[in-house]
Image (cartoon, rainbow, N blue to C red; front, side):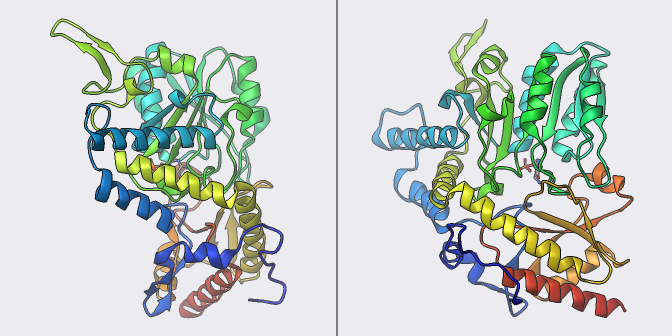
Amino acid sequence: MSPSAPTTAGTGLNIEKVRADFPILQRSVHGKPLVYFDTAASAQRPLKVIDAVNDFYLNHNANIHRGVHTLSQEATEAYEQARIKTAGFINAPAAQEVVFTRGTTESINLVAHSFVRPRLQPGDEILISWMEHHSNIVPWQMLCEETGAVLKVVPINQRGELEMDALADMLTQRVKLLGVVHVSNALGTVNPVAEICALAKQHGIPVLVDGAQAMPHQAVDVQALGCDFYCFSGHKMYGPTGIGVLWGRAEHLQAMPPYQGGGEMIRHVTFEKSTFNEAPGKFEAGTPNIAGAIGLGAAVDYLQSLGMENVAAWEARLLAYGTEKLSQIEGFRMIGTATHKAGVMAFVLGDIHANDVGTIIDLHGVAIRTGHHCAMPVVEFFGLPATARASLGIYNTFEEIDILSDALKAAIKMFA
Ligand code: PMP
């Protein structure tokens, strides 16, 4: 660690203890200690989450909601407790507003089909931003093609920040939904979501927030944000894959038709007609990812035990240190230099292709992501085919940033 490197002092986190919670960090890659800078793609899991999932399968496994036997009741209780915990974590007014889905992608598709589609007329508009992940672009594009609605895109500046004046101008009567990412996975930009929601509200426009990258980095309060829908994924916030959340305002969820038909989402079925459950059951057709939801509940417990303010404070230090350290490397250019950033350092290194950078530093045990990060339009906005992206998690250290820096210098030498 270089002499100027900050420490965990004052952040309330004991980083050595945190690292010990993640067994995978003990392993090596190509004979070097694993340095994991790919948390934005998928975070590692703490033992508490792995244990919760194991415990479910070892001791309580059964289908939920339908059984009178003990295991089924235990499984139901654990699943519903996970919903209550998750609701508390985002300060949802009621646990019934938390719908379990497969992840952010499914949550957005659910809103597209059940909330937006029935309201769309040809010529109506869906507004998104230039920095959206494909999961907050493609469902809207598909819906527009089907309905004759138009997809409009709010521009960004060269730092990767939303053009707020343009956004305000684009909020017209024709807009039936504004979809915006809370924290960009490609740039790290933190968008002023509360301000955006307040603006949209003046025009009566509902707002969907893609919170996939915000949840692991900062405290999220859906009431304070003032949004209508908030979507996120378990695996980005130290929980299991295949589980995620759609939070929606109760009045919206009540008014929305089901997304998929099947078991569990019904109240009464005859061949002539079926009636449906209340939300959230109405949107959880079929056997859900029970173990995943329980694992997500454990991830919430884990993050709450660390304290999201501590997580945010530690990662802000890492980001500041990393930005300064990496910027000293010749040929390093950060892509995404917003004033408010979280968790992501995307970059290019001279004219070395991002994939080559990623492959070479993997030999040093360093895992980063390269490519378009499922956000092609924003990478192309910067005139690039791809970037390399080091993304941060609570387990990262200043020493690891030094290792990344040395590995990047080694990559430059190879191409010199
Ligand atoms: N939005 C953002 C900002 C993301 O980073 C991701 C995952 N890379 C998604 C949405 C999609 O999440 P998932 O694949 O878990 O559905």
